[in-house]
Length: 293
Image (cartoon, rainbow, N blue to C red; front, side):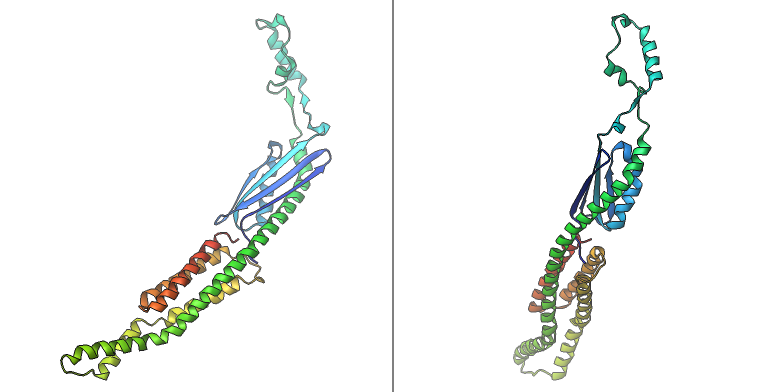
């Protein structure tokens, strides 16, 4: 199965007077990289949430955003009366204290006056809810990745078919190249030797054609490229459950290597044209592999 690395999934729930929401986005990346944005009260859950997402997603740059709003009475902190009395006692001796007590809002904003010691209890309540929402968001993100992956697979299959056609033409053309070279060589040597009233010796022709055939033999490269193409078909098979992005990127490099070797060995115009088409298709496969998980 081919999945894209681009996707989005979201899930939300209302539980016991609190509103939770999880959004997960992913874009291309050579490796798996996660970035989490959590409310301060839930930071203790960061590690387990990252591990949970990492078990579902293999590759890509992933952003996980968690939002939490508590509208219940639990959201209220409690006033530290001892701290408030200590502040008031210090304020009594300051100039201007006779004008009245400071505004209540200013007092409550002083460090230590309002305390919230329920962060751990909040994290414990949120843990099962967020675990469920992360799974739902991952499910939806993977659905989107799978839909885009189907389009990617069809594009890759078409590129594979283009390479196969080009390679078939190269394979069919290769045996003709030596004979074409032989005919051209005989014609050229006959023309040159006729001016000297000499004739072309067959053994000279055979030796030169054999040397040319050895230098331009591309059979080994064609066989290797056919093997790479067979592996490509196996990777892009819809029944393949494994992520293929990294393997496909490496395979495209190997296919390009063989195509370049064929191009350097063969001086035939028709083969050169077919190799240009094959290399263009391989380049596109390499580009597409950057978006495959």
